[in-house]
Amino acid sequence: MPWGYVMILDDQPVSMRVRNDAPHLVALDIDGTLLVTGQPVPEPTVLAVQRVRGRKHHVVLASGRSLTGILPVAKELGITDGWVVASNGAVTARLCDTCADGYMLEDVLTFDVGPVVQMALSRFPDVQIGVEEIGVGYRVNRTFEPHKVNGAQRTVDIDGLGELPASRAILHGTGVLDLLEPLRLHGVTATPAGLDWIDVTPRHQSKATSLENIRSTLGIARHNTFAVGDGLNDIEMLSWAARAVAMGHAPDEVKAIADETVGDISQHGVIQALNTLI
Image (cartoon, rainbow, N blue to C red; front, top):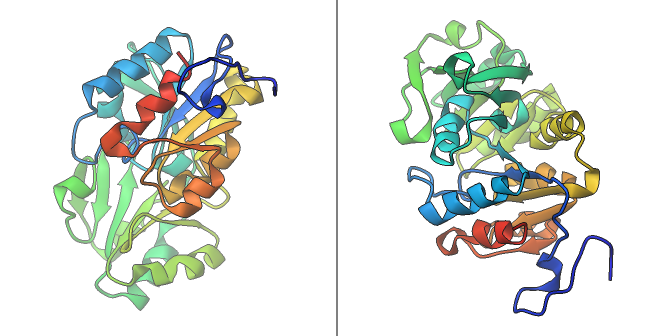
């Protein structure tokens, strides 16, 4: 039997059993993993996360959401200290009770938004663009529906969109996925988040790069990394984790990266994964 597994005679797959006497870094996606977008975290999921934290594991929320969108979820989960990874890894923050606004920024990566805006508008004049303002919301060319982005929205002209470097920009519109390769050739990370949505973040950066920095800082052994996700922006995170779990509704390319697949969001699959740590 490989190191890291223990045999327990129950109906749980052997691959889902781990030795959990040492602290793990537990990286959890939010939308589609911990909750259905626009809904609160289900109470059973809250309890499962709290039990894992009670075993001294380090739960790190790692999301494509902005920091503004992550903080309310951390509060629902009772997480007031520790790390969070926002904006697909471009923003890393530490939560703390005594910090202003409940957090302090640890690492912020940015890129020049102006050329991305110009490229997008030249090919898709009607594209909807949002440029993240950390801890606040977005500069936008047109207001997004409230449930699509977190935080305040400030409408600006085209020059205003690209006036400052940013950690993340959103491109939303029919056919916008045609911009994926041109953006990547331009030198940024472009990640699809639906059929009409691209997240643009700095080059060579992902949830995984930030999680590895956190792992190193915490001194967590590489083999004690654990991640659960469901989206294309989770592929690097799942590839990084020593033990990777995909939600049951995840696309096939995400499941192919994972070591295991649990139930879908309606079945609270994340709880199945977390229970193996407690």
